[in-house]
Structure formats: C-alpha cells, structure tokens
Image: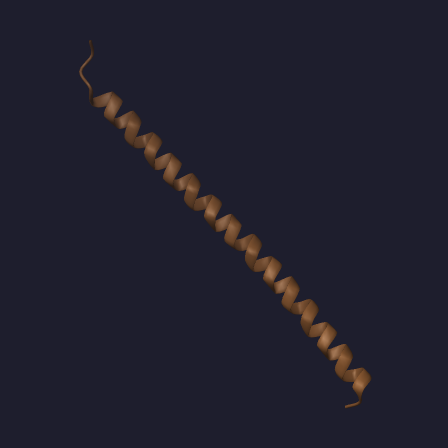
Length: 57
C-alpha cells in the first residue's frame, strides 16, 4: 500500500471515529434526559401521594 492510500485510510478512520464519538455523546445525553425525567416524575408522584394522604383541614 502506497503512502497516499495509507493517508486516505487514516482520514477515513478519523472521520468514522469522530462520527462514532458524536453518536455516543448524543445517546448519552438522551439517556441522561430520560433518567432526569424519571426522577422528576417519581418525585412528583411521591409529593402528590404525601399530599393526598394528609387529612383534610
């Protein structure tokens, strides 16, 4: 393999590496948003449950 072919291979591998990194970053952000939403919904349901079990004044 000549030097130009090796350079093209390096460029292609670098582009694939960058694209894969971006995809993993986006997936990680989506998973974090889902976890945060689940925690917020859990806290809201707990608060509403505590408020509902309190005797009326």
